[in-house]
Amino acid sequence: MEKVNANWPRLKLAYAIIVVISLALFFLVNKDWVTGLALALILICSILLAVDVFAQKRAIIYTEQIRLIKS
Image (cartoon, rainbow, N blue to C red; front, side, top):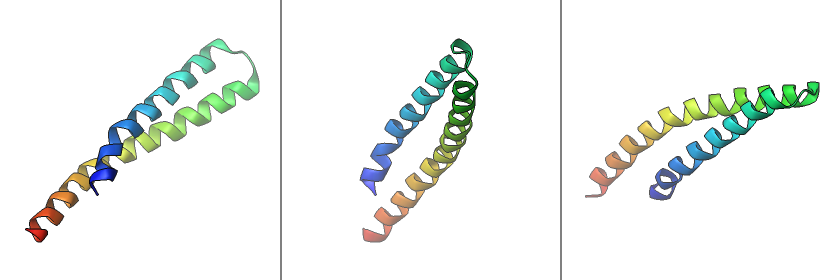
């Protein structure tokens, strides 16, 4: 479980980078398919980022409870 908890910061950073790149594409490229792709990526990554924030908090509590049971 520690490996999973160690990956949260990397995942959140990756989602944030994708959102920033998508925002840049949305505002800088004037093609319909790029606009649609950028909006889809922004929506998906924003939802994943929000879900992962809550999942990280719960995973930390879960990991602590496992440590207490093992001790």
